[in-house]
Length: 411
Image 1 (cartoon, rainbow, N blue to C red):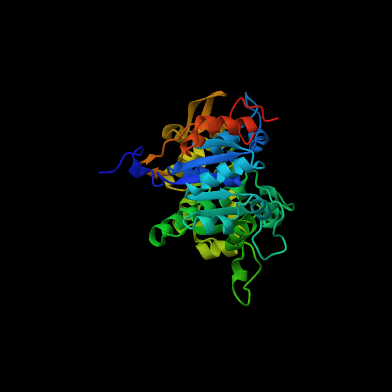
Image 2 (cartoon, rainbow, N blue to C red):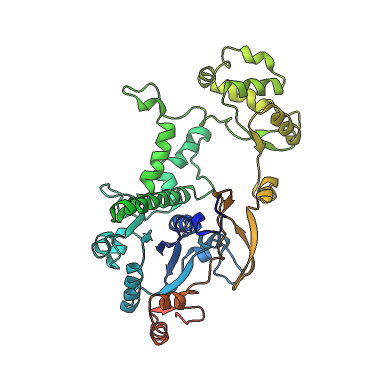
């Protein structure tokens, strides 16, 4: 019999403690995944707080931007000023009781704080230490600052649009941050599994540039994967200017037909059955060689009827097609409503907030959403007590400014 989603068996990382030294998006995306799997994630923030609290947009209290809330739910907030020796001593105590440390500071900043992998793993050999960096060791970019847009540019993602549309464009989503964060989480999971077998932790580094460049090259190195090359780099289908949502009489739909059966069903549905035997379109290989023709036929086929009409036609023909949502209509998507992706909860300072539940199903159900992302330092006293500090010690740390909690004057 399957375990219910709320049971310990359904939280595979229950009992794993993670020290979260990350900020903005790439690191919090990683530790959010670990929290969803049941890890106890303790997010350490400086007095100013994670910059995403404000960078991500407005909020009623000014420090809980929507993107911050969604990336940091289910975590505890520990406020420490790591410039203070007493705060670093608390952090050392926390690391000693933890399984994983995740950071996305530059390597030299970690070393200055004594949080680099070499030092920590010498003292705690079972520790899994993961850093997410902009650029890996050994190359000329090592140590340079990196944000999602910088990585989208240098990894070739923005340049793909130049091949298609004549000018480079960023994907309007922090794609490099989210993808790299998820890969870092998977690397941590693998290291924890290996630790069960060997008793030893691991030193992990996940560089954003190399990670995203590999994604681009896996898809677009294409004919240049062979020696000698069989043609220029770039997937002609993906880079075709007509590879975009298709215009209908009243909007847009997203459609893909790859297999011969899907293409033949599409051509029948749009009233072009004579093209099924056209030697330029008959097979997958034919359509790859004549991709301009295939995409032109596809793009010109739908102008006479509404999106709803075409979606019904393609559903009946088993052709992959769905509405092309805007940000506004996505919130009203009937499937997302039926599966309860978006919910609501009460926040301790922001009132009613909307939440986005975990999407991975285990034993048929998602993990609990977890509480909303707390204010800076909200759990400081709780974490300090858990580390064995008495009330007088907690008071002294907070009074000195080495630690802080809500209401503390951090200057």
